[in-house]
Image (tube, rainbow over all chains, first blue to last red; front, side, top):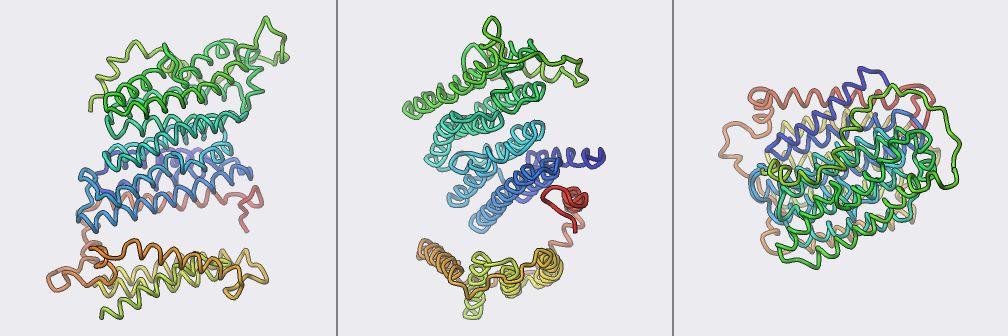
Length: 348
Length: 173
């Protein structure tokens, strides 16, 4: 793509999310969401492949519908309560509408159906932007409208963790696996958001480096299916050794960083006296853990001294920077001992 | 006046049903003309005459005309019209939805929303709609810049999406 257009689009993507973060008026927040949607559309269809164009169209339609619903909900709230400020509590009816609209924006179950298909049609870099950056703006709006309609939020959260677990079980395409992983993690964030927004933010802050690392690893290996990952030992032996740590961190296994948000969330849910919800969420994490384990098995646990499954490709020195992946992989695997400091830093 | 407003609002809901149950884009655009026109008259009844004028000019006279030309590019010789039986099914479905939503909101303080009254029109010095536009150009300068940037961004996005001649699924004719 023309570098000027590319920089305009990326900067507008940043502008949109920044506007939503900085806004105290619902119209400005809606504007920021629309700007990010608009700016990412050409990025998604830049390869002009029919599958990419299909993903772009699906993304645009769902995001536009969600944005229209946000506008409608905030207008209804302005009609009923007489003000547009985000900091004031919403009336219950526009609050529920807004929650569903933001759930559609983020890809929470039961309105998650667009996410696997859209992510599958994108290349890994754009998929990375979709999975990480595009989740920030609706997430922060969701944080600001809490507490609202506890049963709806719990329903969204538990359904998302279950759908994220069960949906990802039958997948062989890595982008769809990451889409269901995103749904499950967002479900965990939503579950705790009604009680403690700090922990939801912690979950997001740990989730982003983990997903970033996974996408970058898949990009380094140029693999989009589980089968092609099996040749990763011949391309990048170091990454083949590190990736199971990242994937199991996504699964929430101690002593990796991914355990931190899950642990804190389960503790908070227990303190709020809903141990059944906590148990269901913990059990649904097992489902996600299975397919992360399957990916790490195919990639790492089948290497030497087992039978060789691929011939060695040419290993040329890469010109791409390896620093971002190094930093995010370290964060995703080794942050658990710093849990008290992380929690203290997040006191909002 | 209340009866006029009621008729207009019923016309708007029926227009929205016709847009949603459209058999082909031309008839959806026709329904949109009806909805936008009636909506503009409702807006005028609330005292927002400037906003109504701008809506007519820009939405109907600009965006809808461009949409109609684009839809005509993908013309089919025998488009489905409203006389088809399949369309009747969707029209009835949406009518049922409207009746359901209406019955859900019936009664209580929601009933006051059915026929709204002009508010504050005798108590204002500056009309709310044109005063708002003036405010956007004076105190709301930052938002004006952001809105202008968004319009430019939309242009660049559309140009980038339709770049090239006959490539992929989007085709510049």
